[in-house]
Amino acid sequence: MKATPARTISVFLSQHARVRLALLLSAPLFWLGLVYIAALAALLVTAFWTVDSFTGQVQTTWTLDNIITVFTGSLYQAVTLRTVGVALLVTIIDIIVALPIAFFMAKVASPRLQRILVIAVLMPLWASYLVKVYAWRSALSQGGIVEWLVTPFGGTSPGYGLPATIITLSYLWLPYVILPIYAGLERVPNSLLEASSDLGAKTWRTMRSVVLPMLWPAIIAGSIFSFSLSLGDYITVNIVGGANQLLGNLVFTNVGAANNLPLAAAIALIPIGIMIVYLGVARRTGALNSL
Image 1: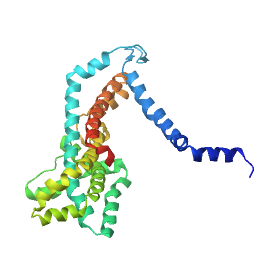
Image 2: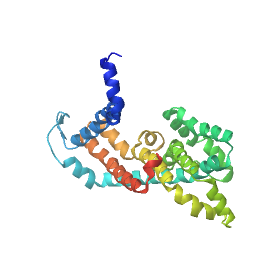
Image 3: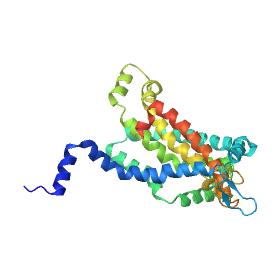
Image 4: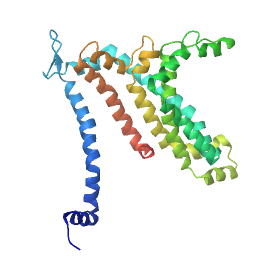
């Protein structure tokens, strides 16, 4: 058979698996480096620039003023604590809600019901982000469905503010927490649950001593989604958060109304730094393998 260039290349690639893998990954890795890593590098560089107070134009004059302002200013410290607190609360709520749902899906439901429940969990992701947030705004408003439900019991709607922000974010990111925990529970052998029951362990003892130790990586994997997405969100806060601000709102304000891109970049470094630490801790638990 005549040796053509295409055949020669094909034979070469079939004999060199590493070259074949490198060529396969080169395009996505190049795109990742260009779009993500280069963008983060540009953000870091921008944080060290300044804005001319008269013209409002960004000047490539190197300074640490933005970094110092962000890390020492009482406003930014307060907003950072508020943002981290909201992200933690959202994550804890989602984990508490996701655990029984995922356990039922993985260990109780029939195969057919499992498929139906997975579709049900994924269905909210098909709807527009803004539609879901505005739906919660309507539900939490005065005279909304939440007030209608709790009024007979002497309660009132939380209205707009941090509680509304936490409720809405918890709803938005819940599917991202359920799915990793569900995948983790599917990897827990049923024989272990049966053995624990045969040895006399009650349900809660089995959950605490058998299931949870094996499920921690999946729980932490789910928490990465809810924590990181809550940490950078600003649209939900603008719609249902009232007068409250999170870090995302400060970035949005400085990019838009204030026209101070270097300060916005410096503020954006805070959630990036928090997530780097969080991912470093999660990596030690093996949670990244459950993503």
